[in-house]
Amino acid sequence: MVGWGPGSANVAFRRPNAKERSSIELSPRRRCIVATPAGDGTWTCVLSTTGAYWCPPLHEPTGPPLTENATLDRRGVLELDSPLSGTHPPPPLRWQRYPRVDGYIDPWTSSGKLRPGLRFKGDGQGRCFLAAETAARSAVSCLQGVMRSDACFPQRRPWRRGDLAACSFGPGSTTFTRWVITQPGSISR
Image (cartoon, rainbow, N blue to C red; front, top):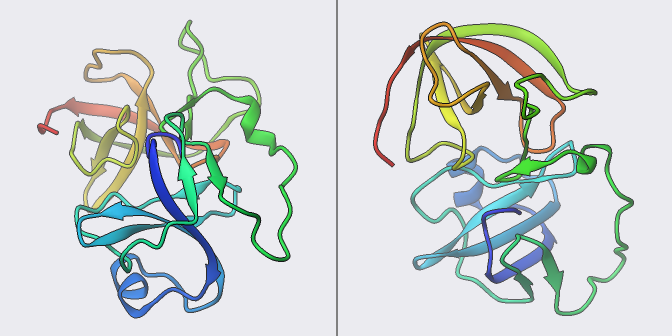
């Protein structure tokens, strides 16, 4: 949960409430949900298939008021006040060996090469820009028609027309879309 600490949190195995299901389109099945404070409610973060938590890039609260049972440190490490019944610490995940930026794998080496073990699946092209609701604060959003990728990492900065970006499939994903930037732009954060 890099970028979400320090602060209080709530961890629970539960079904998402109606607002969480409608705001972030969650299924009604029970799952591990981490909630962090947001105004009069909370932001709802869920465990993704990669084993990383995904928190939607929204501005309004998505969940109920916070009932604290955990804390996040400044690095985003989550620590429960006491263990939840029937749980155990997970083994280290394959993607945790890679450097991460705001919870997403940093795909590029310092020389601008895709890190070993990461792969591209699919191609995209279009305008890339900074946006307030980008999934990772260090990433850019890239747009092709109505398709938008919100966690794209340009191969170099500042990026220019024709440069390459790697757009993540999600937190902890080792797969990226190969994105050709057709027009750089900016929207203030």
